[in-house]
Image (cartoon, rainbow, N blue to C red):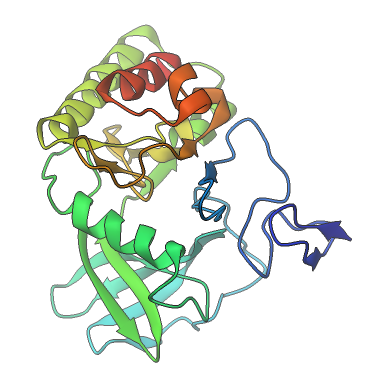
Length: 255
């Protein structure tokens, strides 16, 4: 058994995330942390670990909110489950990101969820994953977003070892362009890392997972330590100070 460091709940020995609060049980070099001295709440580890042994809470074929049909479970993590779904009215695939059951709208986790939608919808760029809407079915909240048919950069590098020089340069330029588009809107990502970068089937890079993002001039989130230790700027880790420069520091480590 594993004891959750955040809420002290007992979990199975092979679990990665707490079944009670969603906190990370095994902290690897790319585990997201979110330490808010006032709230001490768990944030959102990347949802990129598929569980092929289960279909999740929805069976394939289930119709959601009258306009989506579940195709399969794409992954699950501390922030909930992500499903591949058919947007029946528009005729294209989307990703549906569900919060864990029972998360209250007043909770910090829901606030992060809503913030991801609010900030992501300000961004329209080919190198940033598009988020469409937030909805609810039977008391369960979910985000609908662009479905990217590919793999994250972390998995790609683990699989092939290293990118060819020209492809590495191409992806670097795309990441710089996507991040610049976010900064032009005043949006700080705060959790840039290979696991939050998707490479689609055409080899194009997309920045994803803005659940820890905040506006540059906003006091919301100021002073909280949020991000991934292996890719976090020193001032962000020490004092919770996040700026455009701290995002660039993380980008530099990725490159």
